Image (cartoon, rainbow, N blue to C red):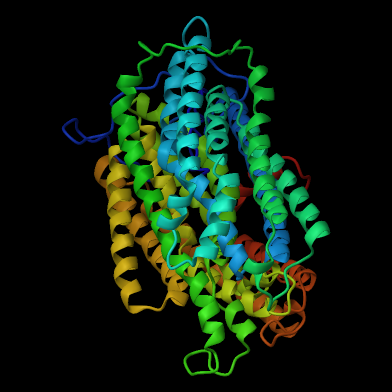
Amino acid sequence: MKNTPTTTPDTPDRGDSLGPRRPGKVPPRGPGNTARPPAPVPAPDPAPVSASDPGSASASVTPSATASSEADNTAKSSAIMAAGTLVSRILGFVRTALLTVAIGSTAMAADIFESANTIPNIIYMLLAGGVFNVVLVPQLIKAAKKPDKGSDYTSRLITLAMIVMAAATLAITLAAAPIMVALTSNWSPAMLALGTAFALWTFPQIFFYGVYAVLGQVLNANGRFGAYMWAPVANNVVAIGVIGLYLAMFGSYQAGGDQLAEWTTGQTVLLAGGHTLGIVVQALVLFVPLSRLGLGLKPKFGWKGMGLRSTGKLAGYTLVTMMAGNVVNLLVARLVSGATEARASLGEASGSGGPFEGLDPAVVEASIPGLMALNIAQLITVLPHSVFVLSLATVLFNQLARSLHRDDVPEALATISRGLRNFAVPMMFSTVVVLVLAGPLGRVFAGSSETAAASAVAIGQLLILLALGMPFRSAHIYLMRLFYAAENARIPMLVQVGTAAFTLIIAYVASIFMPSWAMAYLMVSVFTLLHVAQFVAAHVLVRRHYGDYGAGEVLDAYLRTGVASVVSGVAGALVLWLIGGYSGGFPWSTIITALVSCAVVGLVMLVVYFVMLRAMRLPELAEFLGPLARRIPGLAR
């Protein structure tokens, strides 16, 4: 849920060496032209935490000492956010790895729990996530210009959001049973009963996701970026503690048993209730930094005159965009859920022909990826985007909004170009890392049962298919931020609705001809194709509405980092081969050996990659390492 564009103050830095060589011209005014935001967002007084873009360019302006200071502040803000995201993701990996030890990764109970635990997040995003994440901040910044610094407006907005989310959560939780029936495919009554029991404990998460989002946007609007990114750390710490307690009480997953028959109420309460507790903590910890804003927030009722009607059009477009994407997520999860029932059937029929002829039934069941395996693969492939792209893009969004408010389209395009080129450094390398280490990475999250290697292969196959779309996904999301910065949510809506329709058509037509056990493979393939298509659409739309953003230079950066990544990948594959990574050796033995293998191979790849980029004299390398180079003596050399 964490693409969170925000707008905060500061004068932009105009370092002239980083922008595109040929900035796009300002398009003429006219219908459909979005060069000027339809509802300009005024920049408030400077906040303690700066969030300007360091180095977005206009070639004719010389950087000032003030701009340099603001660039450092931006780097600091981005670094704090990236650090919070990285720590949270690492803990999330630990949580997921422990969970697969507890209940398996391609096992029946794992898929049932994952379905019940994933639905609340998707439903929250479906109901209000887009409005909270995109619409609130500009309105909060406008309110901050008032004499009370937005205290009254913010209090009323928080009160309204909590009432709406509480009512929606109550209604959805009461409808847990029919929702589980509607959002799963071919589940038996016993599977649905367990899924509904999980859902009754996990669906209250919807309310706390809403609290977390609205409080986080209030903090972001006041320049406090860190807390929103660090709060999920608390969630993961609680979840890890819960899973540790589960393992101490109930032991680890063992293949071959009947999970449905053996599952107890205590396991349900601890696992599902404990994960909900983590979301509760994630939301509540934000009240601490919120209280330090000094706004004197308190419950306030009466929402007439708050300007919500003027926000309605933008919110409407954004809501449709989020609905389209999250309806797809729900329906895709429903398709993939069919693998849960098919897995057991294939295991029983493994001796009667077909693609799994002659295999042990337990191995067959472990080889079929379901919703848990799909979500693990997505968790791994989204990490580079979350750490390296989202944190910086969240800060750069502010510069885009201010540039467009001033009608400075060339500066906005320079910011787009600079961001895309810098993102090439981590994203191309991360893509090759996932491709090379797909097997060992899968093993890390395959649990500890005797069929873990088969589960690892299934996860690894999904990783390879998803990795191919990683750079396109990040580039598309960042390009769409240009339209959100202009308060033009209509264009992203059209792109999202179009690709959502295309996804569902392909998925449901293909599902007629493909077996249920192959649904996860189908969906990750579709996802990768759509990431490419979305990027192409975003590229065309940005050029049409705003002009050239230096696409040639962006392509050059990706090609050069791509070459360096492939060379590092060859070196990494050789090391992996030497330690038995392609013959079922050391990397496949245990979770620990898989982690060690990933660390060794990854380090070799990283060294080769940086040597290659250094030899190429890639300017984006120095820019990407800038914040670290200022803190680590000798790194700049």
